[in-house]
Length: 103
Image 1 (cartoon, helix red, strand yellow):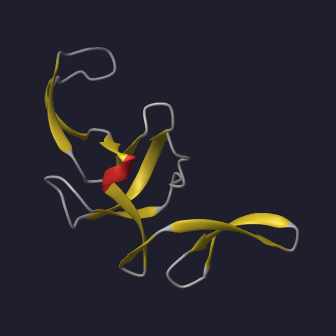
Image 2 (tube, helix red, strand yellow):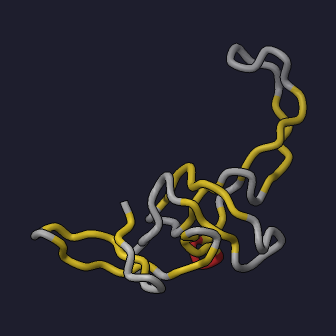
Image 3 (tube, rainbow, N blue to C red):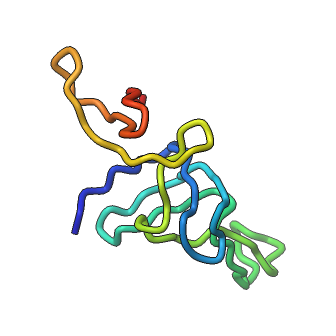
C-alpha cells in the first residue's frame, strides 16, 4: 500500500465515483483503511434513534469515507500530485504540476 499524501485540511477534488468533479475540504484521514472523509462528498442517509446527545433522532445526512485513490489534491482548482522535497533542511510537500510548496 502506498503512502498517504493527503492531510486533514487539504482541498481535494473527486476524480472517480458518483461525486466526480466535486471539491471539498478533508475532515479526516484514515491511513490504515486508506480512506478520507471529505466535506460534502459521498453523502449517506443514517437513521438515528433519540439519545442524550441527539434528543430529536430521525434521519441524518452525513459524509461517508471515500477511498484516497478516488481523490486528488486540488491547487487553485486544478488537480495535482504531491511530491516531497527538502527546503532549508526541512521535508516539505510540493505540488508536482507547479513546483509550489504546500503548507
